[in-house]
Length: 194
Image 1 (tube, one colour):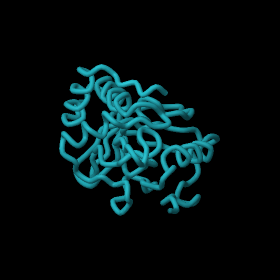
Image 2 (tube, rainbow, N blue to C red):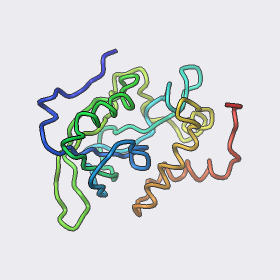
Image 3 (cartoon, rainbow, N blue to C red):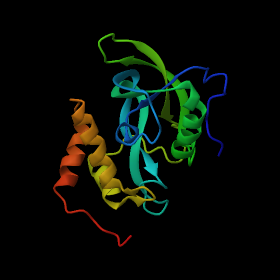
Image 4 (spheres, rainbow, N blue to C red):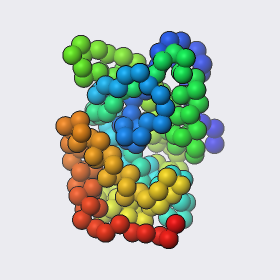
């Protein structure tokens, strides 16, 4: 499958804004000059992506976040200096598009700073037509996948708990994700011998 990515002209020149709503909030992995709490309207954060690489395998998929249709999402907007723009895009494509489950898009994002600026940010939205799109899973199904998931980036449990911690740092509560994290925190970590 080919990745759904923006063209170089769609990425425009100058500083690049990147909107993070999952692991990018607590582990961006790229250099940035500004980090601002932000809100995206029209899509919401959901554990709707089966993870076959970072937090699971095809045989035992984990679950990771995607932006799915409807609602709003609070996250972090990172401003990347123009000099690092294309290197950052290349890094994000390697990280986020490993199985092409996301569409690379630009979205309007409201910065939650004193000026309440509106910017255009690069972000990754789930491709609903992809085989890894999980849709709306029940709480029990989500918990099962997160408990079993372990991939190249570690246990799925750690991913959910770290994301919730990042949200709490912003004073944000994502009720379904928080409920899941509370159940996972109450369990002893599972070690798979890796």
